[in-house]
Amino acid sequence: MPYESTNEDHLVKTTFAVSNSAFIVMDPWDNLPSKFLNEHFGKVMNQFLLPLIEKAAEKKFQVYVFTNNCKKCTSPYSCGVHEKIEELLKKHSNLHILYWDEFKKDEFVSSLKEKRISQLIYTGFASNLCVIGRPSGIIAMKNEGFKTFFVPQASAALETKHTWKKGKIHKYTTTILAQGLAGIINLKDLDEALEKLKTD
Image 1: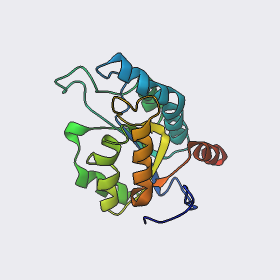
Image 2: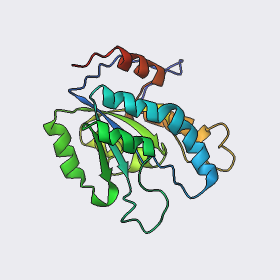
Image 3: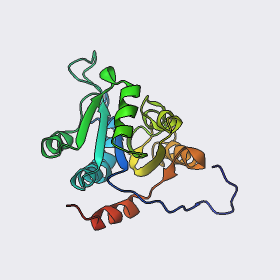
Image 4: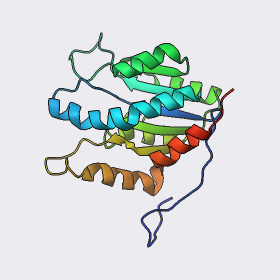
């Protein structure tokens, strides 16, 4: 719920388990239509997002990666996934690629509920567009009854002319999400928790 506080952060303890939580990765593209955009998102992709995807998959969480199908796209840009994710797909059956042109929200929601997944952890690009507004984004899935969470360090926004360097739009988006749409998870805390998690 939105809250009034003298502190910037309002901390809530939450427990995640493989049995009830899944990771959602929005549009992890490395073939955007400009060198600048690829470099901007690429830093987050390589340093934070890809290692998190790999760790979550290794710990047996269901990981859903959303993207455009390059074979059906009218543009050679903004489709497919990073080659590292392609490699991980061959190793982990719990890592899934879902294409927007084939996506049916009702079927996706049903499949999550059949697996007893009630919590969704969001990463990927862009925080102020796809992460929030896509058919499987935070707003849509929160309205379906899921608890939604966001990892800002494993994401970035599509900024404006004057905000690219400081990432102000991404910070504002994170603040808006924190006021009732999603719990904010610090990547360091998440990494530490995943490291401690034992798998059979």
